[in-house]
Length: 442
Image (cartoon, rainbow, N blue to C red; front, side):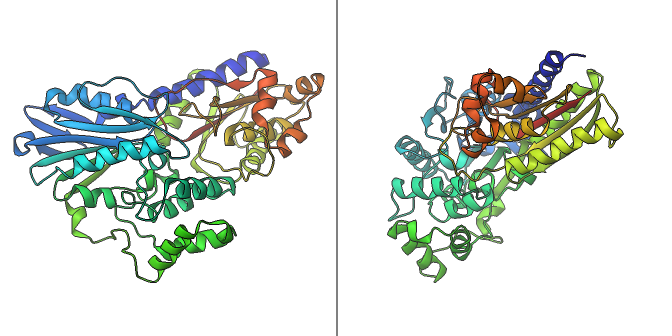
């Protein structure tokens, strides 16, 4: 089997994983309307008990989710507002769509969130609120706490992302600089009945982390925020307003986020309708149909992208040398979300960086292909979903005068793979269930 055929198969496998996590499909599999009763997971809601139905939410996949809800509920929807990333919208009939900035929040995001808050202020005991959340929800639903300006939130978010902080750490800080995250959306909607449908983009599907947990109790504290900032050593770079708020909160002078046991959560249901496991299982089914012996390693892979690449390449080499842990033709599938501590001045994303680091390690191996991509179609601040590499990538690069180690040092994986036409360009996929890595060995 030649290298080009394996590269084509890797793309087919990735496409299958994305299709399985289609937001509309995920909603229809979990939400059904029968004889005036709305069935959501194991719960049932008699619609005649509600005088109003509101739909709110945020995320890259939230519009597709909202479209499915409109198909199910139609004119029963009283109104709604959804915030999504620029370029990810489509027209809806009864729900307003607002495009905004991601990964850094912007004024459009604040404007859309203010509309969500205004709608929630109209909710009462006879209101059913459906909240739709997916990856990107944190940045796309900004509502800074009093005394915190948008520029302050943008600055600290960017600093945390660049220093290699995990999404959990980033979101702990976001929650405590917000009036809607960390359970506060539930607080705003109370006493309405609130149902949150979630397409998870978080390792382990932790509800407190997805979109910064706007509808779940928040166990983190202001003190945790200060520890995170001290861990990455940029306290001196923070705006005074942020330092004042965090320190005042740690001293008990600012109200904490709603905690476990708060009565507001008794009228709230949270349901994950799609996640990375759904995508990896679809990828596995596709690889088996293509004749590969397949092993799904994990859906909870984290860590520095170039370090994770070493593990994938080591597995590929082990198959070639010993036939372990599975025999050729072999496929390893992994899911999760790596990080990159940006030190260079290049352009790229975690998936492209992982693929570049892997390309260096598999140089010369004739029939090894590695694909790493984000299921949302966007890898970091680029128009690529990720990249694909094989045992000839480095030789092809050398012929163009490209030094892979130099590009890796500069965190410039985007321009490296663009020169080779090895970027994976999908455009917005409409979903977001973290990343998929596919390793093929023959």
